[in-house]
Figure (tube, rainbow, N blue to C red):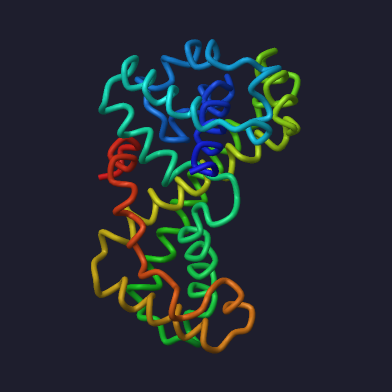
Length: 244
């Protein structure tokens, strides 16, 4: 429970940043949540409450969720619960399924002839990669305006008090947004193609993990997730992002 409470305090800190509000669409944070940013800030004492890992936050995490349910409504709290569990990332095993399949999809596409991948599946993976590349390019173009000098006074103070650098905070936003791009593009292109495609790339991934030492460093064949299985965690977020 302590780690979960620390995570919640980290989420409040993250939501207080102006740069997060600027990238809220990419981060899958709806307006109903980001409209409360000033109130979130008012509940954070930079000198007392940060860094988030420096205090026992269990009571504050509980009170924060009570406040949020009252201010934003139960539906918004339910969404934020899903978001902090599934979307928010701060290292460790966060977003590990997408990370694994990000790497495996590159390998499958690169080795498609050796793996005997069907032409249809090769074209599907190629379309996915093209869509992902376009979306990633748009993200990085938007991130060019997010420089250290452009950060608000609150952001600079809060980031420093958390024991991070501005680049750390910006990279965290990029990593979460990039994982979201992967999930959305995979859903639009790959999941919609159907179970036949998913089964074929799953078998290809297992073969890679069996044969390649480099691939097995990601996970092993007994723990690799079935492609698209992560989407059950992102149903609300995919709807918000506009994925069909």
